[in-house]
Structures are given as structure tokens and as C-alpha cells.
Image 1 (spheres, rainbow, N blue to C red):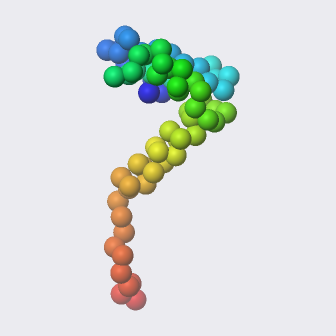
Image 2: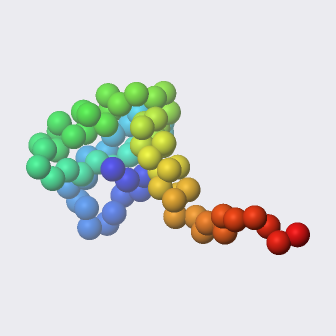
Length: 75
């Protein structure tokens, strides 16, 4: 799933959720494309991005952030 269309992904299915004007673009491997699009459309959450995907994105971004040294400060 992507928030913007890839030019090379001509097989992506646009899925609109939560009354959003802009669609999400769904591709699939190992699952029929129509089934994958239906699964994304049925995911929980009232907004464009499903709640589960928003949470996963936030966790991934938190892990990618540089960490601070974990030890007593030298003050």
C-alpha cells in the first residue's frame, strides 16, 4: 500500500477510505489484487490510512530515529 501512485505500478488498485478524496494505492503478491484492495478498505479506522498501518509507520519511524546514550549524565 502506498499514499502516492508509483509510475511503474500500473497494476495498483486505488482504494478510497473514510471519505478521503485521495486514494491509497494497493498492490499485492500472493493474494488476488481485488482481495488485497478489499482487505485494505475493510481495515479499522475512520481516516484514509488504516489505524494499524498508522501505528506500524509510527513505530518504524521511532526505531529509525537516532538513539541517545543510555547512561548517567556527566553533570
